[in-house]
Image (cartoon, rainbow, N blue to C red; front, side, top):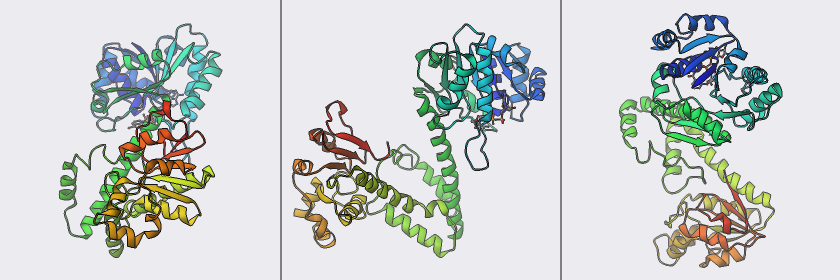
Length: 438
Ligand SMILES: NC(=O)c1ccc[n+]([C@@H]2O[C@H](COP(=O)([O-])OP(=O)(O)OC[C@H]3O[C@@H](n4cnc5c(N)ncnc54)[C@H](O)[C@@H]3O)[C@@H](O)[C@H]2O)c1
């Protein structure tokens, strides 16, 4: 393909050299004339292992050159990759001045171009930026219409400096956000020789996915350093702990626990996080990530309460009472905390939980239910339909498989608040549906 790459920094230069190496015809553009000159001399403008050689090879074959002329670059390419910087402003907000400017320049150049041209945003941009900044600038400056005369796709870059060329070749995923198949095809066409699973999605999901990834990576570093700090204090080898930790690919390094839903609870996580927090405090250790975990969980319960309050409905039916489906363990169940808060605010409450009802009759938890939460246990109903019929808002509290089917029996005047995202046949759902964080 014929590709123009805007911005010859780390991402742009690596992309330009690697794409040229894969046989594409690439022209790089930068506002900095030194970077343009260096590329044309066959040298990398940034320090990155292997990049000097890759640029030299690409320039040598004639498949990579650089220019300062946007018009020429757009005219002579079918796809433009935006790789300009998106730094922080002083207040932390995203500074999209470079992105705006480059979009305006490409828009100006598109004014005289007849062929359909696709602009691929490779810079990291907050959700909404492509629709609010890039597309309007392109439309205004080209006098053309997005989706008809030109296309736009979002294709976040996952490379790490220091191993950028290798990461370009073997990214975890090739992610393409788009609204039109032709735009996706142009972006996908660039990566025929890149060995990675291809994922196509909407523009907004692609934009957000990059932030979810980077926030997660940052959290992993901070978490590992805090565990290391605690280990050092307790005279334990942190690397041995984390080596073993990383061997657990079932719960630790896996997709488990990574789906948005309701607060954690049960007999282990709250108690054990609390104990670790206490021990750290005792030792005067400053571990802000670990110290904030329980607070984050409480805020999430608060979110559910606020969501219920906002509906203005007073009769609440709670489906699920234990912290997860299929158990009768009510210790530190966030649904118990939710129920108590709602009762305190004067809501009328009905609760259904098959496992807890059984436990109330026979199980070992019978005493806990009768002695610790008698005021809640009287609200338990044995019929799911009784709870639904007598409620204005039905809250799905845990992922019991029967709840997705049960809420299909809700009336049109009812609200369903889903805290877990159970599978629901939305075509058959009459009630208004809300999710706690989706
Ligand atoms: N550096 C990384 O490891 C990395 C990894 C993944 C994603 N990203 C994202 O990719 C984007 C680029 O990052 P970077 O580190 O390569 O930035 P960088 O600052 O190294 O390079 C940006 C380049 O864009 C040029 N530029 C600015 N305005 C221009 C214009 N109007 N026309 C042409 N060129 C212009 C600048 O002169 C500069 O050379 C950012 O959004 C960043 O968040 C960076």
